[in-house]
Image 1: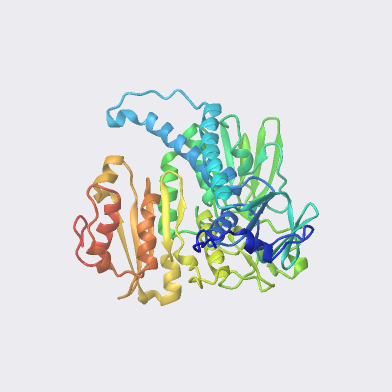
Image 2: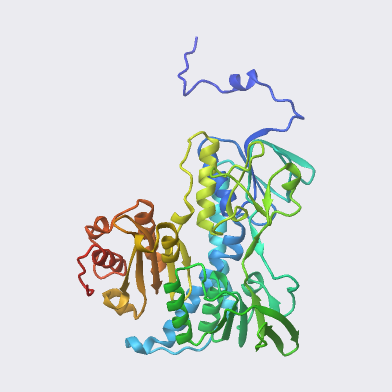
Length: 480
């Protein structure tokens, strides 16, 4: 008799023990509806944990972030950075001339980046043996998603349908009134543009178009640009934009717009008017949850957002939700984290819930703004005005920042006699520093903990170390 080790035992005998009826559709461990950041992260991690996964996507795998958001906008921002560097090259002793922007070439560069990442993502999904279904999915029961009449049943269902560019009531998109999706495909640089909304998306496009040579005006109804950030950062950001020649109006609501062959004509509620070639509407993103069967199956919605508990469960069957459709920060890395969390939750690993305030945020404009944790105002709300300490370290004392020619600062917020609960930065490339910032906040580090660490010189990262030295009471390149 032939003896087989466990590793070499034929598997066909195992399959014969549980024959599959030909007409019986498979029951997957996880059905994921939506192939954006949150959806594909769920699928990849679940497959890695040995679960059978089907991933359903109506558009392109990778979703908004890869094709119409994070990646293409950051490619444009890098092109804009090169344009500014060329204009300012003589400041560094380099002779160069700026001859303009070739938008066809810019798009070729941008699309090349997207294409390579898209191909890599497709390869990952295939290598992990995830069943990819292209088509519009609808939740038809607590355990089934239907695509073109074909049911996909799962022991668990994860909703990850993403978001869309919102508009204001009565403000129609069309002609010279566009959203960020159309802005990414413009075949020319507008001579002038009005941007409705001074949050992350609006500020990034303002930065790009100004660097490309456009005359830009931002209209923001709230008192400050990037209003979700610490007020100190918002004010510094406004000063930097003003210095760059980017115009903005804050604190007054948009009233209406007309357009003709010559451009758009925008009116505010205080009667002020603005004219430009086009109007970019960047008032945020809405959850893509309409006509997908969610409400019909008992999933609770609030203004279109899917309500979940801290473990991202919807309260219906084994249905979870991740990404932009869940109330909170609409960030790709939040979607990644939630996708991983849900996959591990389904696999029985009992992961720790994600703390929203511990998720880093970056506005990739010039200058960049990066933060993690709570603002000074929120900290005072939580701990009282006397229960909070703050410190600002100016990048003027940082050697690498001087080399780069950037201004800005690091602001630290700590609970009095306690850990640091907020790290906020403004300046060129500070988005690259927020990784250490989120470790500090999430690990509840005290100033003396970080002050004892050695930061390489000369780096901008050293500015974080200097700020913590100062907060710990032993400043090196800063005054007491």
